[in-house]
Image (cartoon, rainbow, N blue to C red; front, side, top):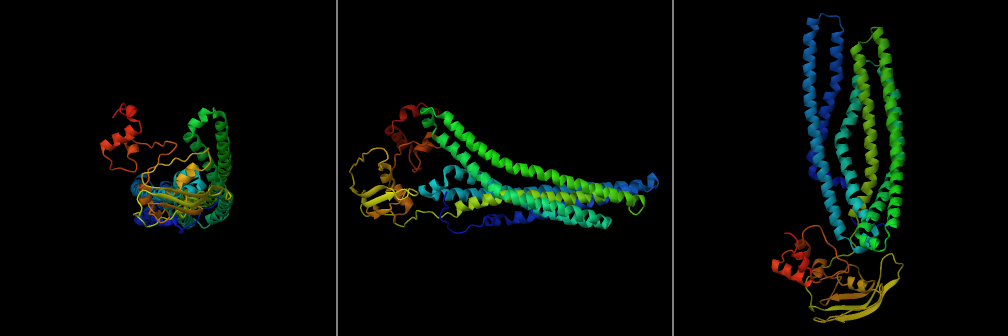
Length: 468
């Protein structure tokens, strides 16, 4: 597909501006949950140190109970902060996705047939669904995890070093190793995500073509060929997706191995120091929990980068639609000068991407008010193409088309198309009632007018037998 003509540059992050209060609250609430969580290992170490201090039971019990109740209270506050953070992030991300889908759909509705043909129906469906879902998920993840991961990383590091400086050597060894794994993962996964979305376009295109063209497929008993075509597109998508999943399947175990080795190293160093009475056992336990949190934070970062890689590919595809400049510019004329006339003056037309091969050439035709004109010719001779120039589904490559004495390029598109009734070769039914389909384009039609239309279309015989 050739790139569509680009219009004004769109910044997707601007779609979060109306929901800035949620975007601020979510990280702040998450920071509260993380800070409370960082104090838990320290309080636990106090309980352990107190319990093995050798003091009488009745002496240590009040301290243990007091510390335990404090931990319970902090857990409840942290849980509330976490729940509110998830809610505010959910509101921002869902509304972001809703606005993006609405603007994307509005843009698709404004595109010319030439432009929708370039994108393909399957690709547009993927962009307005799967790609926007990837962007929505990224917003949710970033609002919650972008503050959580750094706080756990630096907060856990500081808390661990306050227990014993020697634990810093374990950090210095394990953190760079995990970061290297994350960088390798991002480098190799990013280009694959663009391919994954294109393969999904192909799958959606095959499905869309077979659903809309089911009668043709069945009439020619072409089901086996179409099934094979779908299988090929589906396997292509599956294999491309699996190449990303294989990479992620390797990343997580490697990160877990590094984390567990770091915990073992902390316990080993802490065990020797506790034996030498240079550190308390409870502090060793706390250090093991802190390094787990630190390394888990890096694993969170790897997850964020996974989503960023995927969302970056999706964002480019969504922006391609939003930034696409509508090829057919609407004029400003709303009233004609010669009611009911249609005129073609030396009109020639070639479909875009057809290497300039003309379907119509030098057409001169005038149809006056009240006249009926039949255009007869073999399949593919340009009958539909000629009629499609009247409501400006396409623009002529040479010459001019006039409706009511006004060049169609000067007409306001809505005013022009409201003057034209179009009966297509292929019937299209939209979801809803029979009445919804009949009144399309004339929503204020009365019941009598609806019944009259169904009689003209000779549909009243079966419509009248339908329930409700």
